Length: 269
Image (cartoon, rainbow, N blue to C red; front, side):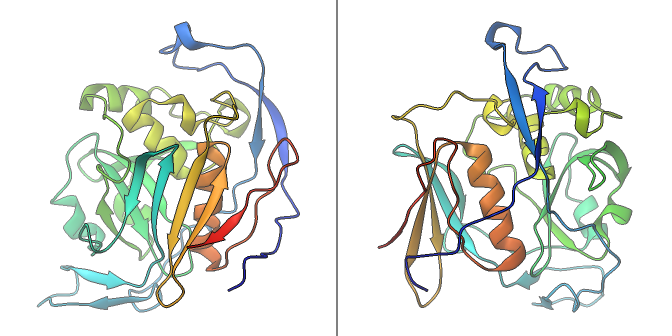
C-alpha cells in the first residue's frame, strides 16, 4: 500500500447546537454549532458466526466461546499520550456469543460487537439482557443484547480507551438520560462515540465537542501485518474514530481532508 491514498469525497452533515442535553457540562458549554456527519455503520443483521468471519477456538457448545476474528489492530495517541489501544499482543481480542457475554457484564460496562468487514457496534450494558445504544436509525434506544447482536460476537472493552471512567451510576445516568433522542437532537455520529461518551464523559467524543488547535493532534497507528505501521494524523478524536470505523468496515485506508483544508498525512514507519 502506497503513501498516496484515495481521498474521502463525500461527507453529509447538518448543523447542530453544541449544548449538552444532559446539562452535566454547563461550565464547559460553548456557543456555536457542530457538524453532524452521516454514519455509515451497517445495520445489524441476522448472521451466523461463519457469516461474520468467526472461528471457534474451543467450545463444547455453540453459545460458548471464545471465538477469534481477523481484525485490523490500532493504537492512537493525543500528542504523545496513548489514548486507545487495540493490539493483540497486549490484550485478549477473543469474542463471545451474546448469551455468554451476558454472564460477564455489569451495568455500565462498555461492549463492542464485531464482525468481519463491518464497523463495530458499541453499546452500554444496562441490566438483565438490556443495552443502551445509538441505533443505526439515529435513535438512542434500549434493546435486548441478543437482538442487537444479530449474530455478531462481542467483548467488554472498558479499557480500550485509556481515559478514567465515570462511576457506573453516572455511566447509566448518561445513557438513560438520552433515551429516545434522535439524530437531530444529539451530537454523536456513531454508536462508538455515544457509548464511549457515556462511559468517560469526555466532550471529545461529540461532534464539534473540542476546540481545534495546532498543538493538539491525534495520531492513529494502523498495524498491518506484512506492511508495517501506517500513521494517520487527525485534528479531532471524532475524525479519527470515523476513519478508524470506516477502515474496519472496508479494510481500506483513505486520506481524510481536514477542516482547515490541510490534508491529514499517512507515513510509512
